[in-house]
Length: 232
View 1: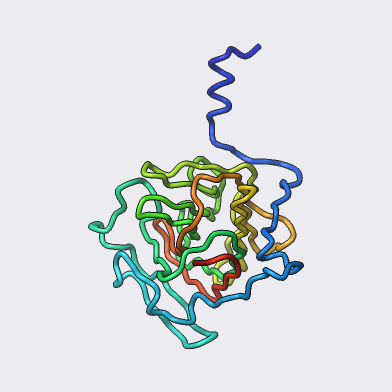
View 2: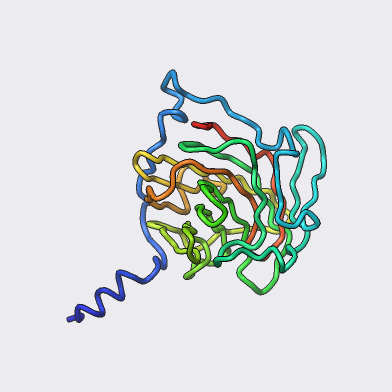
């Protein structure tokens, strides 16, 4: 029989792996397609000047129009390291904040080594040190392959379901989808298979915020980044 202390430690431990079917993610009305309030999809790469970088030398644009690609080509300068433990390389889309939304994108990891390689999508950025991010790491462990919140403190996992890791393939563009419903608190992340999420969470701490792309400490590329939802 477990002691009370042991049970508390078990509950406090980050989710390791959830077998079986993922929980349902409630699609917000603005993205359901069955409402007059359904939002129009917007291309977040239509205007590259809206994107800001902590270290512009670490990033590069290539292509034009529908073929535009944002490349993370190097690690950001150490002087731009965030105050709290969170992705070191994040580019942010300025000008609009998003609440309920569906975001789709194509991602390609370009650095493969012995580490737990990753790319990240951030959202709900209410302030410099307040945002969520989906960490698409190869292997699920305490910090990797999780949905995290950064709230004026080091990142903390809020994942309620996850698979065993993100199956990145060299030279391959992978389709990713993120759904956010601030009324229910639901967050869902899909990777290639658009029928079943690979990550889910429930949290209502943050509401409106900006969208970001990047990585903790790896390199990669982003294209066809589109969003529909409630913005201001």
